[in-house]
Every structure is written in structure tokens, then in C-alpha cells.
Amino acid sequence: MPVEWKHHIVSDPEILRGKPRLKGTRIPVGLVLGYLAAGKTADEIVAEFPDLTHEQIAACLDYARELAEFESLV
Image (cartoon, rainbow, N blue to C red; front, side, top):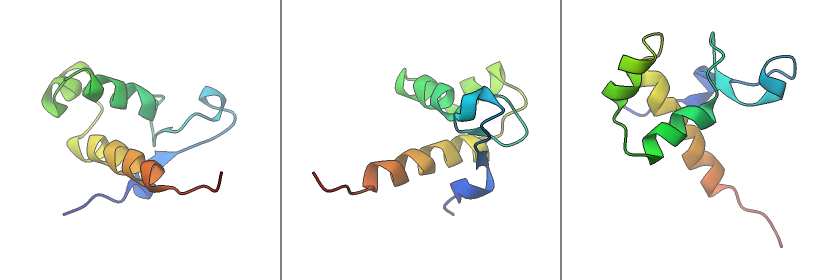
């Protein structure tokens, strides 16, 4: 079942200068995506950040997918 990123990711200009982060944490989405891009598995990320869940990691991927689908006129 797909994960709806909007349930897990927030942005607040007062926290991390507004960078998208996982709700209830100070962990930026970019950090999780960087770990995934480096070849880390979701299990390895959760082992390093025990407060994270597999669902939150999936939400980061869904967020990136939606950004990649954004169309702009050039």
C-alpha cells in the first residue's frame, strides 16, 4: 500500500530553516534520501536512527517521487 508523504513530512521555517523533515523529528528528508542513494537499506537506516520507521522512509521516497513529477514551464 502506498504511503502518503503528507502524513509524515512537514516544514517549519523555525526548524532546520524550513527544510522538509520527518514529523516529530529533526531528521531532514534529504538526509534519508542521501542514505538511500548511497545504497543503505531501510533496515540499516532504522538501525542508525531508531526513532524512524519504515513507513517514514517510504514517505521520503514518495515525497521525492512527487517532486520529480512536478512539471515546470521553461
